[in-house]
Length: 289
Image 1 (tube, rainbow, N blue to C red):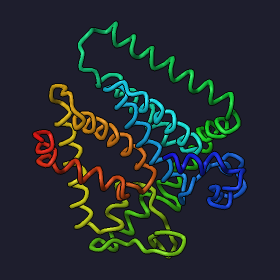
Image 2: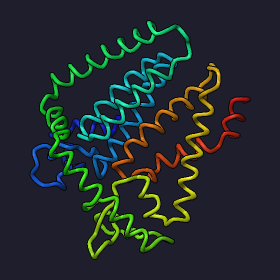
Image 3: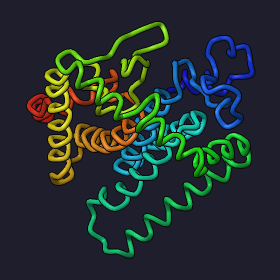
Image 4: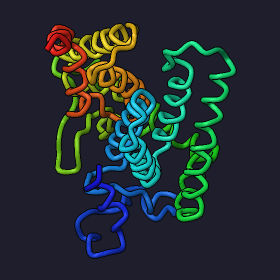
């Protein structure tokens, strides 16, 4: 995360030859500034930023670790630089869920109101600093929530060049191994003789692997979520594995939100979380140690 942050902030320095701006959409003023860090797309960097931000805020809430708080700010900066709408939706949604669920001390509604107020003040300070130093960047990002831009993006991801329905029809034509093909510019499938990309993480699992292998992977994904949820429902324990399980459970939620508009459910990071989530015996054995 630190390496990627250096790459993003160093965009106008000697590092500018090491990475690229996301300019695939052309000369749009609201998209030219979307940073990819040293990665290939802002969606991947947004995925990483969501993981860092959610993981660190859960660790901070359970352990009061100042390092986790620093990483939380780092994740926010990375996410803002991506210009990704899914990042803000994921972070806002997960923070609300955390505030109302990750509380093992029953102190009544007044205590919850106090905790919510504390986080609101903290986030307001971060946003204020961000606006002061990066007002143009934040304004560009917020402009992407404009109604016209949102409608255009929804069409692209539902019926357009990254459409859900065209990929569904392409999958029907090649259900066993999936219709996905690969080129220098990335993966795509063919529908009505035109190249289309997959923007939905759930669907991408089946498009890239076929219905049989895709169903196996998807079942492990669902099972992992249940097992992590089950492990976090137990009484609070004073060990690192309990904190890890909680952090990865909320990351599961945040990363799933991002995969609604990005085909990252099969990414290496998500695979590692799914493998960990599906090994409860290993986790129980580590707790005994």
